[in-house]
Amino acid sequence: PMSTPHPHTRIEDFCQRHFSWGGARALNRAALGGDLLRAPFNVFFAPAWLLLQLLAAVAQRARMHRLAEHLRAVPPGLTTRVQRELCHRIEAELLPALLPAQPDAGQQRSVRLALDGYIAARNGTAEIVANLVVLISGGLLFQRFTPGGLGWGQEVANSLHGQWALSQYWGGEWLGRVWFGWFPPQTPLWLTLACIALALAAIAITAALSGLLTDPVQNLLGLQQRRLQRMLRSLQSALDSDAPPQWRPPEPLLARLFDGLDWLRIGS
Image (cartoon, rainbow, N blue to C red; front, side, top):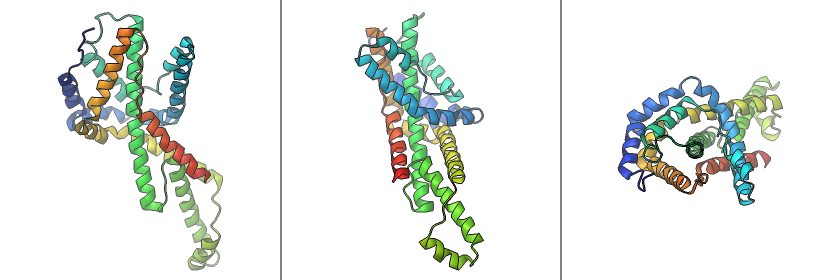
């Protein structure tokens, strides 16, 4: 491979073609359809994938290289059409300068791991955006702290059951408000679980579609360029040293912080 395989202008041109407003619209159009069915699974699987990657790092330090390799090989979820198309464009436009014409099995494995990390970073960003939407909407609708689907779903269930209980109160709505102000009605578990499931699915769908907006914004802020630069530098280092890529994008971990806050809120 060349010593300078990805000049800044190449990444800039790539981002301008695919992450500008027009490029992002063309790229993320593929999210309409089957991706909306794959997105909920990917959101539910994301915490498990991050845990597997942390275990892989521990196994690597413990010199359990075969186990680490198997754990790293686990993809970050079901491959969506948007992810497949984006990876194809990266391989076609950015990677030829890094790789020989016929890469061997080890080089192909390094490419796959690097692209998995890039997709995980992209998914994490989408989840963060979706959870911010949930957080803001929870504050506006319920005046409550709702950092994720658990808290938001619980608030929706409580609101729905509260309205139903108020409409059914024998003493009328005014007296019902007084009574339930002191003794809030107990929301059925089935309603809470159903609303949480719907909220998590809505977050997943929002994350799947968020690229239409977040890709151009990240491009304007230079985040797309920096993410690609880190991924390609990591891949170049892996190819030079014949070792797995060491890039650990922070976005999946930041997305899991919302999950942690969500669980803490439910438990409090």
